[in-house]
Image 1 (cartoon, one colour):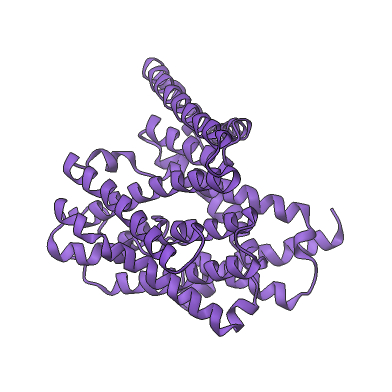
Image 2 (cartoon, rainbow, N blue to C red; image 1 turned 120 degrees about the vertical axis):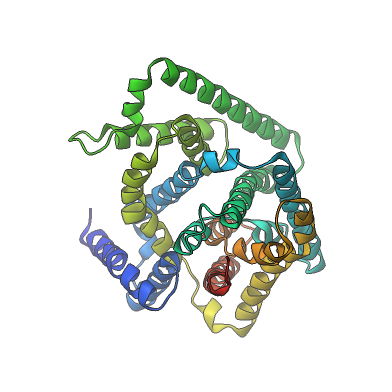
Length: 384
């Protein structure tokens, strides 16, 4: 490791340490603060940040861990509480959201990736907001969390389908890759059932996945093994590693109901080290001229407006759910700050060559705007 790599890591880890305090002080999400810190050090220290293999690797691994934790933290017991009526309405709702997103993207003469940006949903910020309001176990809080969880699952699979479309278009190869994806999902479900059966016969072995606090930390090691195995399998099948990471976390969440301990322990590594590096790296990739350009700011504001607009345009579907009328007016704003997945879409767009550096930075800027504005608007609404 060169002296320059050590200096880069020093600045990044220093930012990981100070930004939670600063972000809390100025009332912005921690991830937004970390992106802003990345922008700051990139423009304060004019060195080649993207020439560092170790920083690039840690950032990519942080992204994979973020997706693993997205699957791990989905509370399947919560999803089991959803009625058939609500489940149908919630899935239909997001299909309508996607439909409106495509329509508006076409009217704006934007590439299809904008439809993905308009429609992705994530509960990464929604969960702590509901927890802060003590609404996690209340009927409305539970329903909107379920709505957001279903939206996040659909968003992750939509990202994979878009990935196939942008790489291969409507072709035989795309169909083959889609078949491989289906095989991967089927094998994952089969593995889940075998794992649950195995743990039913040998319940004491669940400690292999869950045990923490000992000198070997077998629970953490097993979770990393689980993560890497699925990332490896997804890579062999030509599927995005993030789907493998997400499904591996989801399988563990489905298999082990009493997994709060491992969530906490794994979250210490993820949220305490790897995931902040990913967000700081996003800031290092940010084109600062995007924030200096009036057109870029206007485009970011427009994306932020469309994100909430498509959700409100689709809210008539929620009339068929158990949401009360007042709750239907509140719910769309609660799922309109998909920071993590909107940042992911910007990175995919750039890697596919669909978005240039300024376009990707514009989506990152819109992600920061939605997470700051809509989360605070949602917080200010009396939810009881």
